[in-house]
Image 1 (cartoon, rainbow, N blue to C red):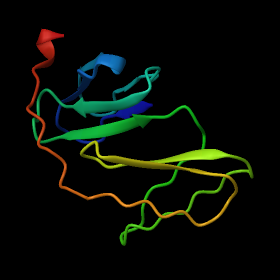
Image 2 (image 1 turned 30 degrees about the horizontal axis):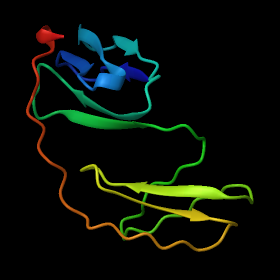
Image 3 (image 1 turned 135 degrees about the vertical axis):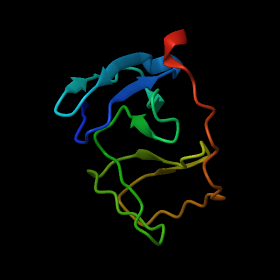
Image 4 (image 1 turned 180 degrees about the vertical axis):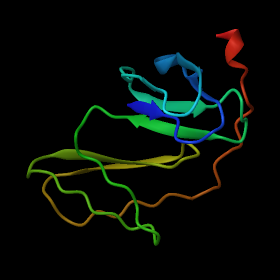
Length: 125
């Protein structure tokens, strides 16, 4: 993933997630850094300079994924076969089922707002 700074403020990007520890130091406009996410799971990203800025990167062992629409529905296109379908919420909740062929699948999650992450000072990593 490439992280490019497109505004006049300095930014940094770091993850304290155990499976994807990294830091891209503070940078100014037009400076970018890259990170290859190799550990499976969720990488929680933060900016050391702006505690309100953050993101999550889901590192998956498959090229098949979907993102929900505004109403919570999603479409996943995958070849016929037996597949485990897993739905993951931003707050870490998950639901899963196995499907034997491409068909409609209903998964229910008790959607909760994502937790506010305590800002971690990257200088400790």
